[in-house]
Amino acid sequence: MAEVLKELARLKALRKAVILAHNYQRPEVQDAADFVGDSLDLSRKAAHTDAGVILFCGVHFMAETASILCPQKTVLIPDENAGCPMANMITVRELRRKKQQHPGAAVVCYVNSSAAVKAESDVCCTSANAVKVVDSIPRDREVLFIPDSSLGGYVSKMLDRPLILWPGFCPTHHRILAEEIVRMKNLHPEAQVVVHPECTDDVVALADHVASTTGIVRYCRENQAREFIVGTEIGIRHRLIKESPGKKFYMLTALADCPNMKLNTLEKMVWALDDMAPEVRVDEPVAGQARRTIEKMLATG
Image 1 (cartoon, rainbow, N blue to C red):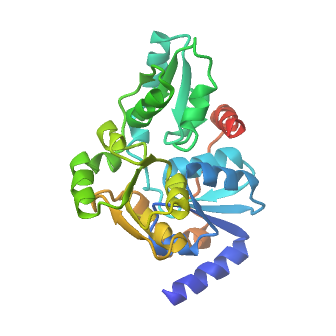
Image 2: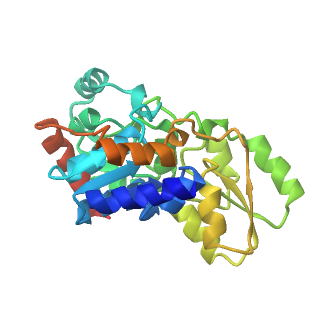
């Protein structure tokens, strides 16, 4: 691994690249990155980096978002097969048909979606700011929330506001079961339960705190509790341990392991910078239309 890291550092300097990694990436990939975070964190980093090359260690829609925000930069992804099942649960044709059924609705698009779907939407959101984004829309206007029905349901309950929900979901988070929380609480009664809003509503109902991945990291770091039961993709445990040494973290299930996120490896990062491929680029006019929805999200906070 030492030789691979050495070559990665050489190529990174040669290409004047910045490496972004999502919280669900392999531990060694996170450690090799310049910035580790969730979709909102990394979107902001992509928008403000001075680097000419962005190596995005995540899934395809994240690299697309970086390309949309940084059209003048080269955006690479270590493995072009790193996709998102949730993003594949909605197409532009399906969305247009739904918009025809609700012509006055504002379309709020979870960032876990393709650039083309973002371009057909009014505003994007992430799990960190979904409540705030939806709340910024006048209450007398219908809201179509796509594609994650679990996150949309959570937002609806938080705001006590009915939303039109698309029947999409994250397969990884739906492997986390409420019965596992009950079992783990019996084993660790002093532990705080913190989960991601992509979980099903019965799991969310049993949590002490619900947050995005960065919100989970922050909550565990700042909370006085010493033990935490965590309901999200297992890759986050690496960052939790690094940022909160001395605390104990119990992942609800080993099944919450996203195979797409784990496709990226150190070797593939080296190959990507060496070959300057696979490149992810979103062409106009889709990029311009999608950029508008993302910038509205970033302006909301």
